[in-house]
Length: 308
Ligand code: GDP
Image (cartoon, rainbow, N blue to C red; front, side):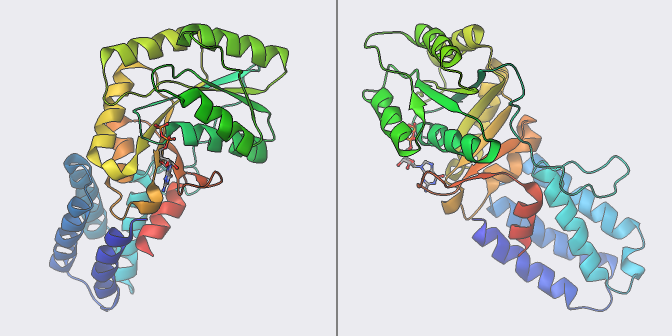
């Protein structure tokens, strides 16, 4: 995860930290290298610009260069800006506000709390639905039920049933021929009757964003009033993942994003651009094929990982 970016940045900052004194042009030179590293990591250009401007201004503006450890101070500024870029809010006064970046699930509504999972086919949506059901039971202590509304892809409903058994979570029995909106209604009724706290709706994926997909998603949201609408996207697709998120945001009220395949993502462009381009928080990261490979996305930890 982030390996190539981490290596590049590590080289730049080791050089900075190794020096006793820093001039303004040293900082500008380092920022030029950071800029290239971020662009190579496939971070969106406006996000890179904002990042570099902000770090440069803070590093040159204050007393940083006159301090005893200017290199370390610059690295701290970079760290704080990375945290902000990944979604952790920096306080208005510019002071750090570490730890506030983890965007949890909102599960406090009247049960069953509905979580709608949306995304393109192949993004890892069905697997992530099962991972999330397990996470909710283990970390929130709540009982979840899952229902597949994917009537397009053959065996999608069966796939969720199999995953349900693996994560020890109930799935809505399959009724052949039933359409998504009716399945959603039946799932809500069933979750209510069986006292499930949370209902995860795995909606149909498509190969690309199209009108039929969006119309179906809106209709399902209309009958199920979800508390969370989580978009599952593949981090390996880089800026495409961010564009998919932008398209979905315009159609349904997303409450967050789950980035899958972070385990194989050496660049990290999607993770680093998502918040600023879409305004939506990354809530979870998929970090492997196993059903416990799901982490709450923590900007502070992720920034720490990038900077080694
Ligand atoms: P869907 O079409 O979006 O429902 O995709 P699936 O849930 O069927 O997942 C497609 C493949 O991606 C499966 O082989 C999953 O095991 C794999 N997958 C999902 N999430 C991750 C992840 O975070 N890391 C890795 N390495 N593989 C994942």
